[in-house]
Image (cartoon, rainbow, N blue to C red):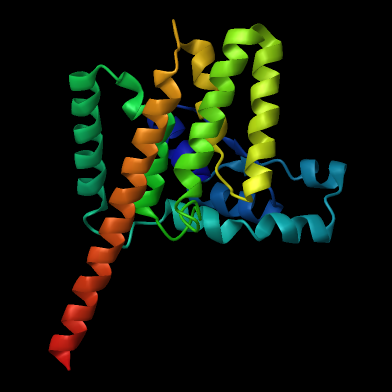
Length: 222
């Protein structure tokens, strides 16, 4: 992600860049790619310990995998067809939030790198958690209002993620959508539920078809 940001900034005419990152070694690697400097004093001043650096570096393979090219060459086609179908369904039914913004982010990750996010370890929890955070946001928006409602939504959404033991950051954004909507009603969490169930079924069906195709190819080879 850092390399993509650096390329974008240079393409937009940035004269020079200074790179920082979780570890000095990673920052120097990115800086070397684009012939720019780093801020080594950050690591010296705050004195990140070895254990902290190891904990941070444990996430680096995930970051690299998300930036890598997908193993499925048809993932973009799946994403585009999925978005098109839900957008058309939203226009036809009037449920515009069948295709809410965080769902597109989720679909991008699930179709492009299904092995990374881990949101589909327990498929039933994916739409359930999103529905609950959407309902929480709707209730808080209607009855608490303003900053208090936002704080309550984020806090309760985090508790829900902890209770169900899932790593699903976009679900937090789902809960905050009612605060930027003109007149959110009960159809919002219902739309979120339908959209996430559709994505879950699509992903599981696609995964099963891929496994069936691979087994068929293996059987022919034998």
